Length: 443
Ligand SMILES: CSC[C@H]1O[C@@H](n2cnc3c(O)ncnc32)[C@H](O)[C@@H]1O
Ligand SMILES: [Zn+2]
Image (cartoon, rainbow, N blue to C red; front, side, top):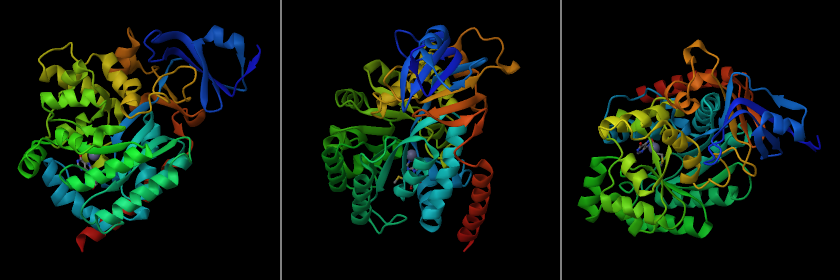
């Protein structure tokens, strides 16, 4: 053995998500610093590398960590607050009003810690966030060890922490300046809410800043039929065309939902290399519709998966999003061959990373990418027998089977125990906060 590494992580099966060597039986990954230095058979890795930290893989599948391409992490505190409503009623009559009363920096800290605990526990290693007081979430992410794109949000009307567009936009710019290039795991970006809550002039302004500062821009778009009607009535356009015309697709655009694009708009997504995030649970729950995922994939759109916030899901479990995305489109298209298991798995890992612009960094187990990976146990009788690992990952395994999480070479969970956040403390803080929320909405 001639090469010393920081750790070697093993798996009875290593699902690399690399096209040429998708699954390695009895494999291992060598990790040095933040990066993967080698992936191969256990024998080959053991022969060349030595380490003090071996993470054994008997009864385990080793794979890239999951990528949540769209969420609002602090909304865990509004889990179950308003259910069984359509998007616009949910947002305008329940969510915006409660947010204007209860969201402050402490809410964000408690809510994003709760979300990060849940994401680590369920195997997410990277997420894209869009919520108020982004700086507070960034600090939570810095300390809990996850990777994230965190967007400074901006809306035309008063929001928690700001009085309207000018302040929210200036704060978002300051947030990007503060975090850009400062932390290996944290990428700041811009998060204008939606084409129906931000004027064309302001969308142009924020798109220009994202382009100038070379950072991602994330937005809700083409989410509901109501949105299409509003954009038609106000601007005689359609949501995707509207934002493309305003220049939002000139850089790294992460477009969440995309339930109602027309054929021309799907072509625009391809032409402008837009990353689309599919949020099946939220789209079903808010009755927004079923996104044309198989059509977009066939045209070459890069698609990732997201949970949306816990107020419209009501959890941050990407295994559910994977399974739903492999199921609902089969019924929608009346074709059981659409979105096969491997496609769903790609959307949650390699293609998801591409869709958010982090394809060079994460989403696959290959030398040179960051050491972002999870081990999933297939020990439970519930998972026997196993004919096909990829099929199991999508159709049988669930969040509770995830036992290990590593991001940038650092362990965040071992033996199913989250190491970087105290679950008991986080839970107690969430319950305490829910009492404050209950009191404030009574008044
Ligand atoms: C300015 S970003 C945060 C803002 O977005 C709201 N939100 C959460 N989920 C959705 C959704 O699916 N569509 C539109 N807006 C959503 C959240 O409550 C915040 O107010
Ligand atoms: Zn959302």
